[in-house]
Length: 367
Length: 232
Ligand SMILES: Nc1ncnc2c1ncn2[C@@H]1O[C@H](COP(=O)(O)OP(=O)(O)O)[C@@H](O)[C@H]1O
Ligand SMILES: [Mg+2]
Image 1: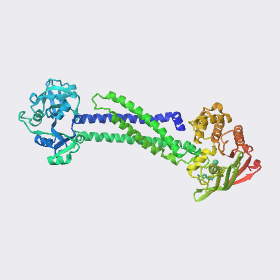
Image 2: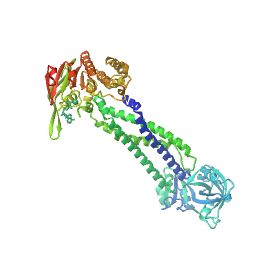
Image 3: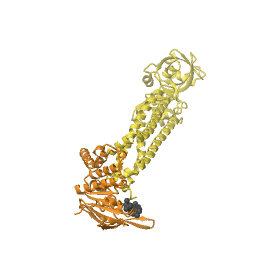
Image 4: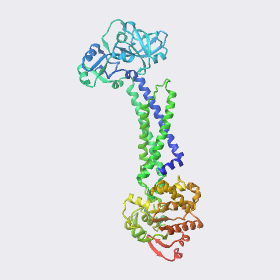
């Protein structure tokens, strides 16, 4: 690294130019990562918060809450299976108007009073069915709904009273609210007659221990039973959004690799004479190669670090605004590492031609 | 035993359908402490001779011995080892690294040859003093004159303590008095250090400083005693 280090210092302008391109790509990568995480959170944080291993849906409904209807009796059968706890879980999207004339979209969960979901998510604060109460999440509170307000739901005659506020949670980019299962059933299925009880629900929340054969359970009950993360795909827009984000990020990495590949191809061609000289003086091809790679790695890592820092700073400005944006160390670290790996792939392509430089070129006369 | 012994070397290149013999059965031995000048027109095979003698390439046939080591058919990596330990090159137009200061050019070579960084630094300083550049040790090539660069190149070639010094057109970029300075330096170092030096040149004005002069024409070597007639 003797020569490589001094070259870095001597030709720092050239390296800085390349470094700033990489840093910009890193900024983009961080922003995209934040946007992707934010979008995912906005889509399924309400589902992710559920203390379940699996969710059961009506067969052939693509594990989608809005299409699935099952009978509470079926859920009780599931619950009777060894190693399985199951309880009904209702989820549907509504438009509601508050008594102070605020209109909101919300994803209303119907929870079994005293069940494991209500216990875990709401710590026992679920209002009982008779009180017609609803607990809202912070997003709805931010829209201007307060404790004590009445919420009138569209396409049903249901009117619920807000009894509490819990931290932000969303489903399908809509803020979540929780109510008792019986209230949810009336709001969802008895649009015209708000009194008749029903035994229908959209899905079952399941906690299964590792020994349970989920496939057999599903077949026996004639249900689709999917893991919690698989159920994310049934959330509105989820797969389209994540695949778009993945595509954009993939392109970004390919672009980073190509920029570095092009840069180092040119850089190596420019330095052909010096590479030939190093070899003529007796440096092994391997050591010349390692020097060059080390040099590039320094630039790559430093530039990525700067880019990530700038990206995090910009991200801090954006988050909390209206754009769904969430920076988490895991995805950001993964994105930085992937960027560096793409960079290394690119530079390997560029620097590869070092091997083919003939030391004889140092003797100017002999071609 | 000679420091450098080239025996019956042939090197040829394809030129269209023809084969051009760059070296045509060339034999040359150089003893330690001897400065041999090789003069000849452009294209006569001088660089090819240095390339083979300096382990930059293998000959098509013949043998190359440096001391008692036969490097004729050495592998590329063995030839690299020979270049960093047994051979010193002084290139046409000096061929220095533009990013390195004068002293770092020498340290780089010393480290390549396996010296510790402290030894390399001490020896580099000493050699820069020998070639008269102690004051300019921290200048990069861009801030040195042509003659100074050539002297840095010479000092660099010596730091590994080579048995053989190969010098390619050292004066082509220099005016007459500087050319004489550089070649005088080369001759003195050759004598003082017992190095076998081959200097390729077509500058007849410096040839008189050599211990022996050989001519090259169309890849064939001719020995002459009276260098004043070289230009005929
Ligand atoms: N790599 C090569 N490919 C083809 N021909 C070459 C090559 N190197 C040298 N030659 C030919 O070999 C002959 C000798 O070249 P060279 O050794 O460079 O001579 P000099 O150094 O005296 O000018 C010339 O005719 C030259 O054109
Ligand atoms: Mg030549």
